[in-house]
Image (cartoon, rainbow, N blue to C red; front, side, top):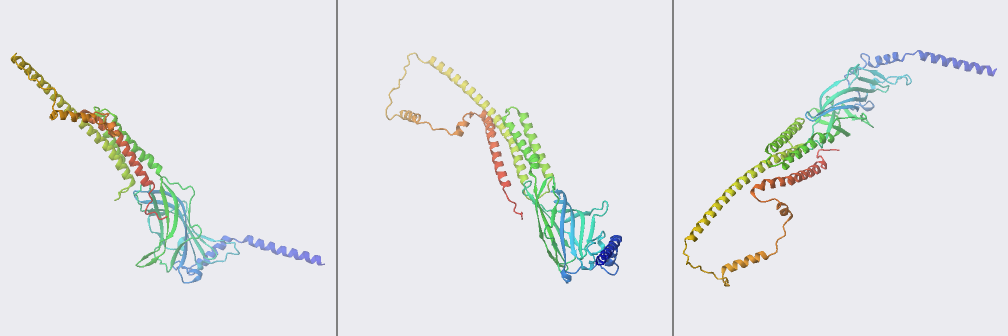
Length: 458
């Protein structure tokens, strides 16, 4: 008998469970969502113009937590000093008026696509130049309402933001570009923005930039005070490092090659005037074109950039090589003129000596054959001034010769005649120009590669 009662009890309980499961299977939770939305957002029940209350229903400011997901960074413009970024922007806050029954955990959240149905923070990007939403195929935006009244707003947007740059170290520089978000109308008494705890900013993996590398980023607060009150503000600073390899290949190596090519004129013959002039003028014009092309890709700033120092010195070296040829040409022509004058003087002196010899010979023929010649003594007295002079000359010749220096020895290989001065200028230029240019490279790279930026805040 007891066994029969136990069997019927199990049968009854099983029937109740089956009926309950059947009833649950017939429930349409989408209809439940509609009823819940109509219940919490119905006419006269929710006013989107009124901000939510503070923490725990107090009259304090509404707390809105922000987080970002950087999807891509398209361009960073040096001329316009701006950068373009595409990101997923998320806001989360609590509105106790939107609480609802989750039907024993079966309704995890409600989804809306119309932002005007609920209260929204009046956030704006303070350094924005241009921006737009994405509407393909549908607007990329959603609002999720959780049972406890928490609201999550997510949207995908593309922004062009201002980025003031310091180009003193260009192209060896680092730039800090900010993304600033602030409240437009609600003061900190009514609305406060906070970064989401944990990881407020995420960046897509394998972020590729053509000329920059994103080294790191930092989140911070930037509340501002105006005549109308204090407004909450958030910012994220992105540190970009410029890729130097591009500029090394496109600017620095070609400029070095132009400077070295201008030195080829030092090894050409002095008489090859067309070759040396065309080489100097061509390198000078090419260097000027290179400089103008570099400046065209940069904004006109009032200070000197690192690239300006490099191109300016390279242009000076090329111009100096052209001036060196002008000096060589002048020295060569001056030496030829003096050599011609010297030859004319020697010819004139030779003619005068020949004329004097002919006159002396004619005088000897006319002298009396009985004339006597006065003989001068062979022995000089101690007080004779001629003997003292000879003695001084002997002492000078007996002194040991001084050892010449290395520079004098090297320069002594080239004669000091007027006609060889131009050759000496070429030889000195072959050594001086490369040494000075190598010294400039040493100073330039040691100065700009190991110099820290004053404006770097990380």
